[in-house]
Length: 307
Image (cartoon, rainbow, N blue to C red):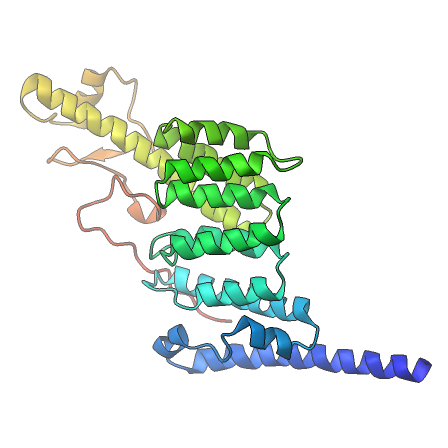
């Protein structure tokens, strides 16, 4: 009995070492191949085949593929890539190996759904992933929240978002704000208010630092967009009253009876161009903002070096 136990321990150790070594070799091979090839190819892309090959160590293999999914997304995101072709397959493999790895669904719903260059731009794949997660984790209310989040933020499907939040609100010990969100979706609530609630809830209810950072950047972008909207509306009102554009931000502030120049989340005051456009001072500081950007602006890639 003791000899058999010793053999089992040795075999298990060898498997762990082999899997870890395989992951390292795979990573090094990725660096050596052209990026275009890496985007299109996985050595094994069938969850069923990989599950059989794991020899019962599904959890360990899931961790390896989850790590690779995170690395892949991080590398693409930092260079503002236009495609994330491997992200959905990597997440599918991960969650089929370990259907209860909740963080993989949360990660997937956020980054699969976002439009390039901030994600894969595949909300339908994100919804498929979330429904699979709910099927295997029916009492995890955060998954229903993430599903409703995708319907609202990416597809603007208020009815489906309301249904997802309502389903989640019926899960034992679910967060009370799910009922609020379900009601707001049903009433086609104002986008800024609801979007702020959704991103704030995401920030508060996840432990994944990358998701928290992403939520924080979206909250910052929402502040910028709301400020720019209000100031731009002031410019429009000024033009309707006077038949001309304000000659300066000071003139606009006086006309709108504002006490001072509004500032962005970093404390920089907004500016007004001679054409009456309200813009942020440093657009690269707000990668998710869609308003307040110079015409034709494109974000600069955040290149990095591997250690």
